[in-house]
Amino acid sequence: MFKPAERLATLPTPATIAMAARARELKAQGKPVISLALGEPDFPSPNAALEGAVAEVRAGHTGYPPIPGQKPLLEAIAAKFKRDNGLDVSLEQLMVCNGGKQAIFNAFMASLNEGDEVVVPAPYWVSYPLIARMFGGVPVEVPCREEDGFRPQAEAIRAAITLRTRWLVLNFPNNPTGAILERADLEAIAAVLRDAPHVMVMSDEIYEHLTFDGKAHLSLLNVAPDLAERVLIINGMSKAYAMTGWRVGFACGPVPLIKAMIKVQGNATSGICTLAQGGAAAALREDMAGVQAMRATYERRRGVVVGALQQITGLSCAMPQGAFYAYPGLSALMGMHSAGGRLLKDDVAFAEALLEEAHIATVPGSAFGYGPHLRLSFAAADAELAEACERLKDFVAGIKG
Ligand SMILES: Cc1ncc(COP(=O)(O)O)c(C=O)c1O
View 1 (cartoon, rainbow, N blue to C red):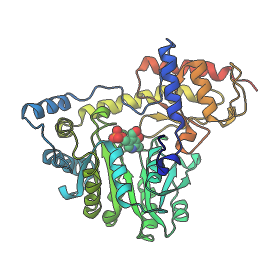
View 2: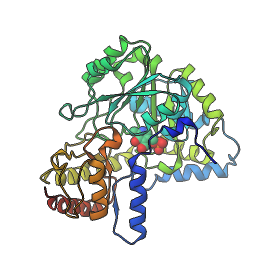
View 3: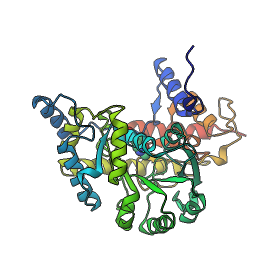
View 4: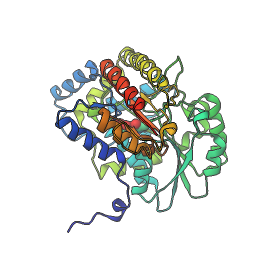
């Protein structure tokens, strides 16, 4: 009889998995399900990526790739760091992974010992605490406050750091809140880090190009270059380039850490698919017009969706400054009943009722360590978003004590 390893047995199954399975079931029954649950762009991948992948095959590059990544892609990534972040990085500081997710996996596997603490501001993308736990890490949550725009406060980070802290995870623009960090936030966090020289920083900047209201993403290393020996930047092609299925992510960090991560990857997946690397290199070498056009579309949709949510009595919704999610709060509706008679005891119950009764798939905020909220992706077609907002309005209007 199969028995999972202990490191898996103690891992919780995210509510999102059950929700996605139920959404698929309802769809298969012919129900008009609108899915705003996934963090996936609804655009096709750039033409340059397609051409780049084809060129790779035609050139006969179909053998095992080097584990850290193919040189043309590593060079394109180094050029990207210079162009987008003003950072000079050497190829030894870089590696290509099977999505940003594998970069995170590599980093935690390469660095965590049993009981090491990983400080994660909440709300957070679900994978940081789950992956950390797989390697004996202990996630330590730092709740951000809505009134602070979901930005972590430096003093709260300071209070969470102990001698066992190995990592601080920063993910801005943030999934799920869309919060971004300003220069003053980063300076305050850098000051805390200078007092804690044993702490490494994982800075997940995968949404860096998706910022709104004319704001630009700032990297921790832009304000604190002295921390370069301790900062690992995670990034990838999935979000800004609409290349989720290509599975190309990358990491940039201190050479000893990158070497250890390469060791991990060499024993797991080896180098990333050559075609995908060719496509990613070509997309990165393009000018930013395509990315900017998608960004502008997300900004327009943000206005439509968040504007509609703000009109719904019972929901409270801040305007996200980046990424492509709205994150309305549900506290005014907790403990009430849906029109279909379901008790809305928490945000999981709310998301389930919304799926069953209004056929909208979302993710409850508690999956991100911060409820009662709901995450709705606005990386979906305009007509779907408009229909979803209408249904949500009717659903909330039907809620009673
Ligand atoms: C914050 C964040 N980081 C990393 C990833 C990983 O993306 P991928 O593995 O597709 O590169 C995601 C995907 O949802 C994300 O939201």
